[in-house]
Image (cartoon, rainbow, N blue to C red):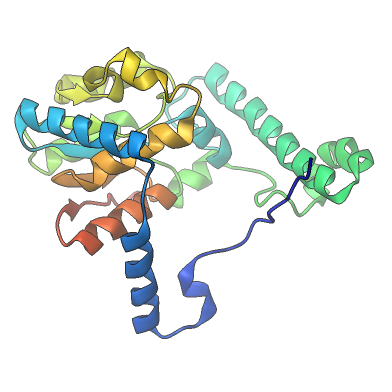
Length: 253
């Protein structure tokens, strides 16, 4: 049995100083070539049709408020002390996992625990100490579900607006969504429009369920990301490539 380790690389097109026309061509070629497996494509299209049958027009809200997202960014605004501590511990575990991956690749398992307890002296972790207040002031934190609700109402969207939540499990569960639901009761999740049997094949495969969100998002009438991460940028670019669809990116500063 052979194992191939593929090193991480920076694939952003803007980093290689090519002319802007070539960059645009590369983007168009990549979006044109993008294909999901038939299983994902077929279910994604079905879910879009079911959304259309409910209200014809819908917003896809990329609500980045999952546990791992908050832990990685150190954004704890609006959380309880217990929740903040849970995220701090998870952040340390994420660091340990990253170090383990590097040490296995380099054959240096002996340095793993030394590096874990000397976190401040390593270069593997981009941010040594994460200050939640500074993160939020700097615009690096996703909007909370409550803030998204206020934002959408300020834009003039009516409470009857159909909103598809393109996200994983929201940290805090239904309790964290109460105020958003009070303003927009027509929130739709994958589990709302797909059967358990349909989703069974995607259980424990977060990248595949994210692909379903991607398909539903590019077909939406309006796409709104609460945080401008990789998927949000990819969806926005894909919608431009297709030549339709409004994308609204909130100013988080």
